[in-house]
Image (cartoon, rainbow, N blue to C red; front, side, top):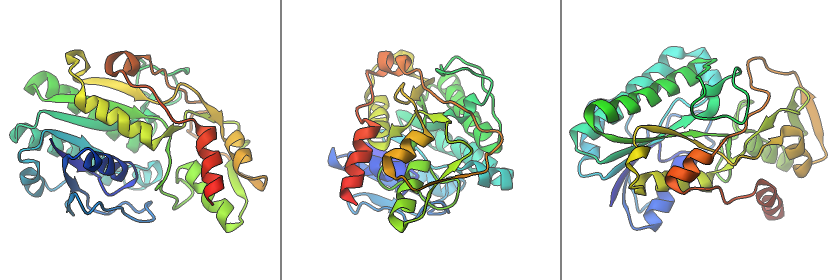
Length: 301
């Protein structure tokens, strides 16, 4: 099997590349190495790596030749940069995604697995969050990622390109970006602990999040690539755990040195995934327990 992984040198993408290589897939990585939040980029020397922007269709097209599956993770993937530069977020997340889908269609790729976000649920929906709930996009990031979802569904219905769409909930794990105040919180907490700095909690820290380990996200992608369930094509699936924790709880598991910083507007108080749809359609369930992972990560420091 041959796979193309866009964004394959980043956090989630590099884990997926390593897993595919371990399964003896032929892997082509497409990444423009531009994500400012990344501390570093990760390269598997058994994969074929190309420094290419998904917005460059002509450069992208030949890299999809003879691919069986495209895992599309490349994105402008942080809320704050998208607010500062909505045009760039739109170019990457909408035009870039359309380029990926069109290149897959032209090169007769069987299936595209699209990485989206739970941010599209916004503030109006009451957890646990289900895929049938209305979208409530609060920023350019969520707007553009949900537009990518709609493009995937359209390509399935209109052109017959198989797509599977995943909405990730608060992904954590090894290689997580830690730059800036909007970095994923668990990775940021570990950086703060190692440096001796206090763990910074936004507001009261009682916001609750559904934290999902990167290995479980990788396995969801593999399940999407392998499924023979025709009813999954063009569909959206939550990738979470169905369990949430407060940010304060997480901080207290890591350190007693904690300080509070001002709250942010426009952020959901609670996120929690209903994962019954992906369990039923793709036979996927999360395997990594957050508390166990934190305990092991602390032991490894």
